[in-house]
Amino acid sequence: MTAADSDVLTRLLAVLAEPLAPGTPLPPGEDEAAWRARAEAAARSLAAQFDAPAGFDHTLGSALRYAADTPMPTGLAESPGRTRLVGELVRNLDTPDRINQGHKGTCSVACVEAWLSEVQPAEYARLVAELMDLDGEGRLLNGEVISRDEDRLAWGEAEARRSPASRLFQVAAMEYAYPDLDYCNLADGQFSDDGSDTGTGLGLDAFDRLLEGLTGTRWDRLSRSDQATSRAMAERFGLDLATLPDLERDAPAIIRSSLAAGDGVFVTLDARLMAGEDPPDAPTDPLLLFPHKVRVLRIDDPTERVWYDDPLDPEKPWMPGVETVVETAGGHCSMSAADFFALVVELSCRPEHTRQTG
Image 1 (cartoon, helix red, strand yellow):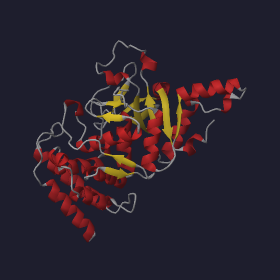
Image 2 (cartoon, rainbow, N blue to C red):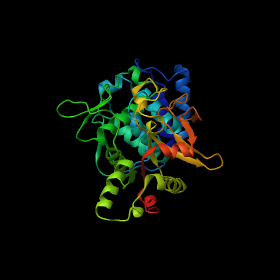
Image 3 (cartoon, rainbow, N blue to C red):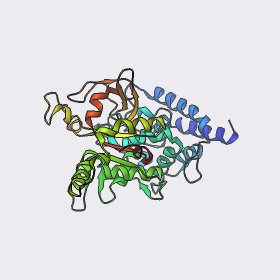
Image 4 (cartoon, rainbow, N blue to C red):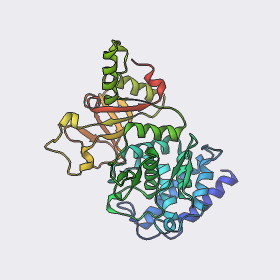
């Protein structure tokens, strides 16, 4: 370990030893001693990666040092406090699959947060650290700005197991994805200028905007709704429908290509396609009846199952009308490939993977 890395680790451990601000419950099953021990272990584990690069000449080490030292708004310092934010940040970096959406309609941004923490940890740390400072603005790789929407993260029951660091990132990401709307975390809704609530979650255009902002590169998408429009236009002008991208036909090949290249691939599953609009075993939580964004992890050919990261981090299967298995405590789940591809209504991937189909 270099002297500079040792200095960063020393500062992180000092912050993690400071008193915890009241008001934000610790993760389920953890007391203060356990939380501190896990946060300190995560900080030590990350030390070997402190030189990992982030955007704009930053590194993981410089981003974490900034999080440890930057002046913060008074409200943020009081709730949840620097010690809690830094501790949850290093734990998210060390164990990305702990990231979840809580009881909020933020499945899309939670998927992206977990993926970014896993594949570009320094960039994730840089953005969260910049959202912690006085102006609360992080510069994205496309040159645009993502902004903090709350100067105090007062805890509520709907936060559930979502960490304060994830809340900071997810709310800012929801704001960025819809630049003409105002996301309110308390109401979990996007509000227009006239005060009307347009609902929660992200449409595909907004999701593409977020991915392209975070990565500074273009992403492609396929969706059943886009496909219907394209087919209608093609039929109108007498074009060959076989040349058009087809989600049902092409999704398996696109996902395999993306996974083989180590690229992220995100899909929206709509269980209503299997269970009907009002399934008899529907979850009581209305959020669970909406289409749900997940990140595909792998296709296991021997078992003919698709593994995916469910940002709900469910403790038991919940998707109505389809058999799922919760494989890990971090929300990695599996489903038969036949069921999975029958439920896919949207797909987002790097453009080079869609060019191989059609």
